[in-house]
Structures are given as structure tokens and as C-alpha cells.
Image 1: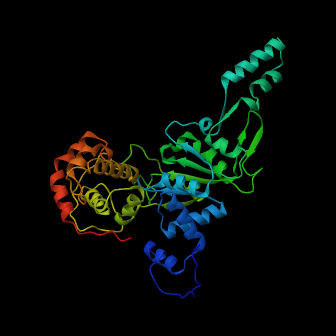
Image 2: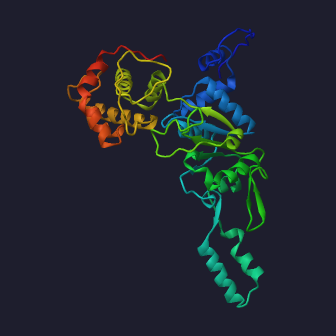
Image 3: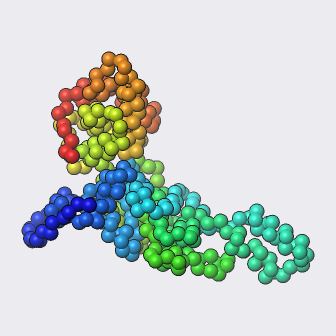
Length: 374
């Protein structure tokens, strides 16, 4: 536990940028923020103090859902998973796609079980009434709950709910209308049984609902060059959320992430991996610019943070496997990159583009003097 000394607040004129607010939180630290950051780092997720505080407020209040937006690879889904681990609560996950039905998300009736119960009814009574047939078919025991239904009906004290990539659902499909009630009232109806399922009926607090979207900060399809179809998130849904826009990890943050995941790879090689990614345009770093010329590379499918981590793990495996040979221990080996190229380049066109300039790219990487700020 870190001791925090109280500090007197002084008003100063400033521009309230993200970096200024992070500096403010460093000057006026909060124990609960530091504790949540520590728990997230223990499960491999690194979040700055400002975003940690925003998440903490939403988690404590539970008055809105938490909407995480950003480009693919910004770490939206990973943050939801990391939060459930940090708080040690179960995570109910719904993967969205075009054509998903409310039944898949909430509940559906098991038709096989309905047929069996109906057959037993007719054996017992060859002429059952319409009421008996209805009560037999629409029995609570015949219900199979989807992820969102289970989150409200399972016998647990607390849980988090992840509704992943909601922007993949077209607005005309009516899914959002059900979702608004689900978030607003923490409940949903089963009209066949004329009952209302309430998440807070047996719990002290409602679950934390986390929604992810690839839509951009201007509420447009900013990531449309990454995905085939992205639908704009409606204003009624946004009103019911605390909307955070996660940037793609900058080079120094990416260095910290990779260093936490890699066990044997030298820090100098990790540094060179990041420079290489920047050189070939694989990462659009927001806050830091590296002293190296970035090529204009038109990626068909640019890698996200998870693919970059996988790429680095593969390079670590090769460096460890070949350590008995006379390879330089502090240099990124181009042949190793070529062997692992599928980890970051998911299309044949991207692979060929990277391999065709690999020698020149590595030469530039060796010359770059950038040092991460940790």
C-alpha cells in the first residue's frame, strides 16, 4: 500500500488535454486508482491514471454502461477481460454480428425439450386443453438463456457483461431497442411466461455492462478501412453509457506491454521490434514520434495489439531456440521476422510487401536512436 501525502489544490490556467489531466492525477494521486492500476498490471493490462479513474467512477456508480471505442487493436476487449480478472468477477460475453437475434442474446426455448414434454402430456391426457398445451410448451424449465440472460439469472453476487463490437449490428434489426431496456432497467421480459427478469432482485448492485465499438471518436465509421461494415452508435444508446475512446498504444506503452509479456527477450530487441513496426506503418502511434522515416504502407489488415504481442512472442521463441548459434544477442534478426511474418501480416499482399523491403527496413531500425520513456 502506497502512502499518499495530502496536497493543497491550486487553481492554474491550462489546456485540459489528456496529458495535462494525467499530470494532474500524478500530482494529486488517489489510492483506489493506484490499486486498480496495480491489479490491471498484474493481469497484463496497462492503463494510464486518467482512464483508470474514469473506469473506476463508472464501476463504482453503476449508473451507466461503459462504452469503449477505438480502432481495432486499441485494447477494448482486452480491457473488459482484464477488469473482470482484476475485480475477480465472472464475465458474460456476447459477440455481436450482423443477423444476431435477441433470442441468442437473452433466451430461447429448447424445442427438443418442448417436444418431449408435449409428448408426455398427450400420453397422460390425449385431449389436453389449449391452456395445458401452452403451459407445457412455455415452461421455465424449457428456457435456454443466452449470455445476457445468464448474467441476470445466475445465482451470483456480482458480474461484468461484455457486449463486444456492437457496431456490427445494423440499427434496423431492432436489437438496440431491447438493449436500451436491458441497460436502463437492468431487466428484460419473457412475454411467453409473462414474467420480468430483474438483475437487481437478489443482488445488492447491478452488473457492470461494458460495450465495445470500432466506431470513431466523431461517431462515424473511422475504422472503415479496417472492417467491412461498421454502423454508427445511436445517440439514445450513447446517452446510457460513459463513452471512452481508447487510443492505439504509443511506442513507450507498447514497450511496457511487450516487456511484461516476454520472459527472455532482451530489452534492446523489444525496442527494435517497436521501431520496426513504426517503420513499416503497422502502428499509428498517437503521442510519440520516432526518429525514423515511416513508409507509406497500405495495409489490407493492419495488426492490432494482440497480433503484435503474438509476433513478439514468436520472435522470443526463435531467439531462445537459436541461442546456441552465433547470432547477435542484442539485434533483431531479419530472417526471424521473415519466418514470423504471418503473425502480423494476415494477407498474402501484406506479407509480400513487408518481405520485399525487409533488408532496408532492418538497416534503418539499427540506426534509429529512439529510447522508450518508462
